[in-house]
Image (cartoon, rainbow, N blue to C red; front, side):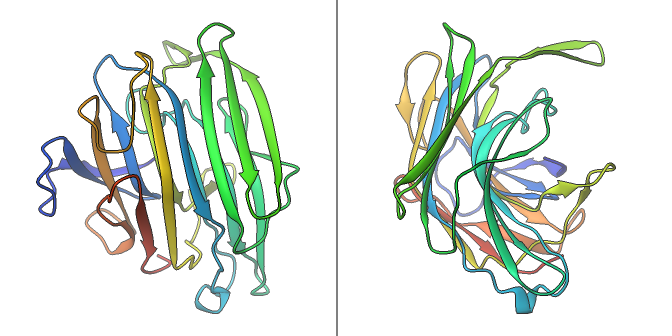
Length: 248
């Protein structure tokens, strides 16, 4: 995540533990709490039908669930999700992927298509120190699961040992290339996330809004102060939508 401004209290919410933040590449929600670790996050969503006519040339998007990247050690991420991209010829392409820091994104063997219902989950086993990243295509009945050992990686003067400081459900404009430039955002229309379930290291379960943790609503901006590229709706039970507004 590349933040574009500090958290701010949202005008639309009467819930005191929801704040708002801006990002240059994320739209969605993150949950955090000081000295609290997360062990599971899950959501179900549909692979979008891209409008590549509105995204001429190469434009990318990803939808995923995972840990970290929002607060604390921003370099550490553990994620699973799907990519929905427009190519230079105007053709849409889709694939599933997973990522655990410090490795780059890995394409999964799961074949997906626009309109498929996907359930993505990332869990952490404290006994084995393993991450389990799973994606299920509910439409086709196919799935994949990968286990990755918790890495001990030094970043600067800090040793990262699976911090799990935050859990997220996000639509994103991926950063690509050796300099990690943020890609133009493909027109995904709307992504509806449902069945959201989050678990912390104390065994508490809940959705985005919970007395156990704080939630941040993240809006994607093209630059500091705007324009707005993608925006999540307020939460309703265990669901919310993210809306594409412009490619940036």
